[in-house]
Every structure is written in structure tokens, then in C-alpha cells.
Image (cartoon, rainbow, N blue to C red; front, side, top):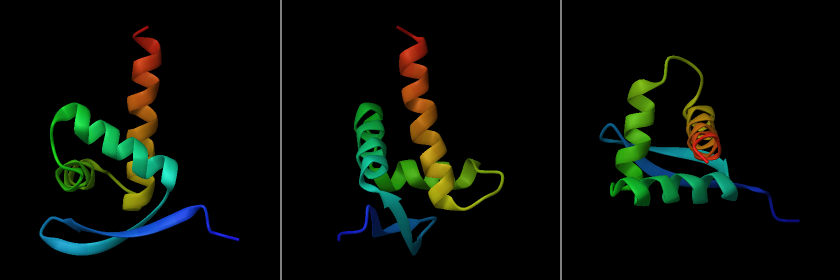
Length: 75
């Protein structure tokens, strides 16, 4: 059985790191980057700079959740 979590390498702050996320969150972060006309790397670096605590994977999940929650409340 294939794992629902996909591990990808990404450059954050000039350093290569691995991030494990479910495919839905990878798709979400890509969509957000496309909407903002920035690269996924730039968006993940921004999320990394702004996070107060926790790991990067959790910070990305929270950013994706917040993005889609904001879309719902603006309807």
C-alpha cells in the first residue's frame, strides 16, 4: 500500500531539506504559489521565516488550511 505522505526535497533559506506532506497539501501549496505568482520554493521559504514554532511540515499544512478557510469566508 502506498503511503499517503510524500517526501520531497526543497531549498529553504538556501539549504536543501526534506518535507513530508500528504499529496493534498503539496497540491494546495502549489496552487497558492501559482495564485501569488511565486515559486513553491519562495512560498515555503516565506512560511519558514514566519513560523513561530513547530516543524515546517506543520507550518505548511496550517498555511494551506488558512488559505482555503479565507476563501470560504470571503464567499
